[in-house]
Amino acid sequence: MANGKKGGARTGVKERTFQSTVLGILLFSGSPFVGLCAVLGEEDNAEKARRFEGLLVQTEGQTAELHSETKRIKSELAEFEARNHQLSAQVESARQKMAQLEKEAETVTALLERKRDGCCPEGRR
Image 1 (cartoon, one colour):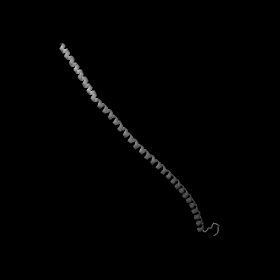
Image 2 (tube, one colour):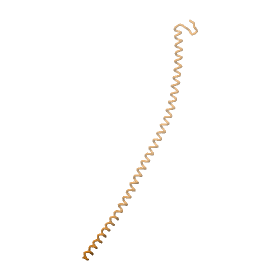
Image 3 (cartoon, helix red, strand yellow):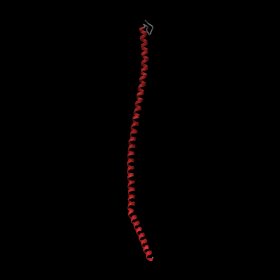
Image 4 (cartoon, helix red, strand yellow):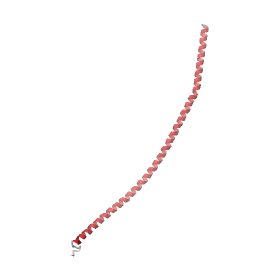
């Protein structure tokens, strides 16, 4: 029995040594994978940052284009408003002239009717 216990103790020690060795190998061999994962994570973050920067630059470019377009449209609007003001003034002037011409036409028509009827403005025939 002493031999059995002694042999069993050796087997237990050998098993623990084997398990420790296997565990050490797994930990040692797994550490590059952990490092690799960390590197891949950093590369992934760097790629995300590059994509974000690209989108940011694109957005800034679009914003500049929109700002430029807004300035151009505001300038055109000011030109249209000035032209509208000029045309409105011309229309009003034309209306006033038409009103004056209508009065003159009425006066001439009245004179022609009087002359046709044989009556003069001074009352002579």
